[in-house]
Length: 96
Image 1: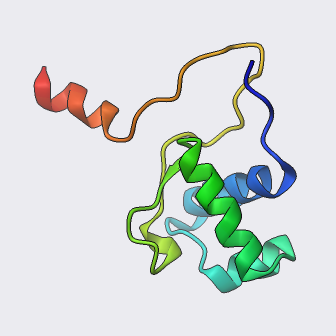
Image 2 (image 1 turned 90 degrees about the vertical axis):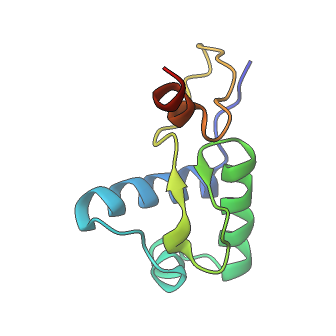
């Protein structure tokens, strides 16, 4: 069974998703600090956890603008689906 995201990770995911949808860009680290009330270290740890769980891809960690959201919502724990590996969606369109 997949557990729900911890508070900071869920909050970061919602901020990233809503911010990118409304402003067509991702928030800066400073904006994430203001919106979450958390330190840079806490935010980076949360983002790394989201990346490990395949909610985001963050290859260039020099800036938050390099984040790619792969799943914008907390997963439903009743639906146990394996995480999609990064790039899997793109492979479908290039291979078919």
